[in-house]
Image (cartoon, rainbow, N blue to C red; front, side, top):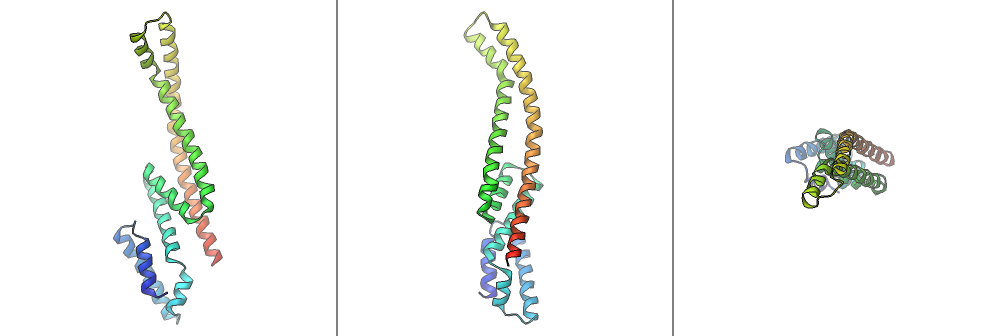
Amino acid sequence: MSKSKFLQQLNESLKPLSSKERADILQDYEEHFSIGLEEGKTEEEIVTSLGSPNQIAKELLADYHVEQATAKATTQNILRATWAVIGLAFFNVVIVLGPAVALAGFILSAWAIGLCFLLSPILVLGEAIVHSSGFFLFNLFMSLAFCGIGYFIMLGMLVVTKLAIKGFVRYLKYNVSLVKGGLKRAE
């Protein structure tokens, strides 16, 4: 593969990045070619030593998305980072996706339980308006107790969610470095 074809494929694979970031990356690889040519290597030898432009792009995009998730931990950034890391190696589908889905399910269900407990007095008051029963005060006091429990659950889930996001981003960074290190040793 020639230098121009390598750089063209790399540029195409890096489309999700801004044009400025792509230009910086392409400039770095231009320098690799310049240095290699000065050392007497052919373009094909340089391309072989660099590896596949698609794999390089996957690694760079994974780094980029993990940095985005670190800088601003939004759901969209975390999902992009997750998919970028999964794209690095098939092994990560089992390692990253399974625990991520389980953890997300636990966190979402705990938030839902906390919210339901927190809103239980409103439901009891609504029931009292529609159906008056002799157990209104008992139901109201129990719903207030559940409201308090729901408040503490939601406070706890706020902390757990922040820790889970930080831990998950760190885990994604670890996976990126693991895959990158494994690929470098294989070359």
